[in-house]
Amino acid sequence: MLRDTLIDRDLFEKIQEKVLEKEGYGENIELKKKMLEKSALKRLRKKRSIKKYSGIKKEDLKEIIEFAGMISLEIFGGPSDFEIAAAHPEWCSHCGTCCKESSPIFIHKDELGILLRFNPDLKYEIVDNDEYPGHFRFKEDLPCKFHGAKRCKIYDSRPHVCRSYPLILMGNDDRHYYVLDLYHKCDYALNLLLEKSMILFDEAVSHI
Image (tube, rainbow, N blue to C red):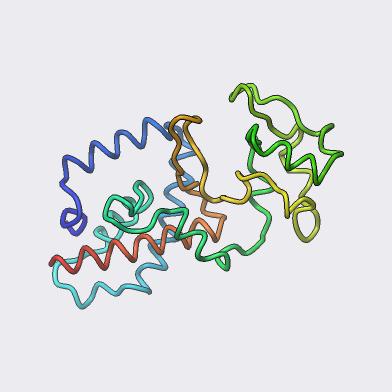
């Protein structure tokens, strides 16, 4: 299989198990993942034709996309998910889906001062974050009340969690990492997954 040219099968299964432990299980998570991978597959087949490669099948592309959604290209000496996303702000269609459907909106303790300095009235809209003691969250965020008709009302000082979407910061202050929110409605997430898949595909076929 094409993915096997990039990573040992046993190692892949161990990584897959670790990812599932971190992200959790559930029908909703699995459904979102499959829908995004389906959209990415449709685009990848247009970007990378498999007809000129003997033995490569549609299933190989599916495995490459699944792998791209699991890992950072940093393990191959490539750019991080954050670096790729930051280089392509044009991928965001400003549809506002993340503002309407994301919850809770996490506010780090170190950014609270800046947020309130530019938006003093927000002190009435911010509460303690029970899930992450010492940090904060918006009182109402489903949908986020600061998402206006055209764009965020506090866009220039919005929290980091909003700036980094579709990458979600996980972990704690001592050890943290980004994971890609596998959300099929987000063009940013889809394009990031597609870009990683193309890079992995090109690397894999170079070993054939």
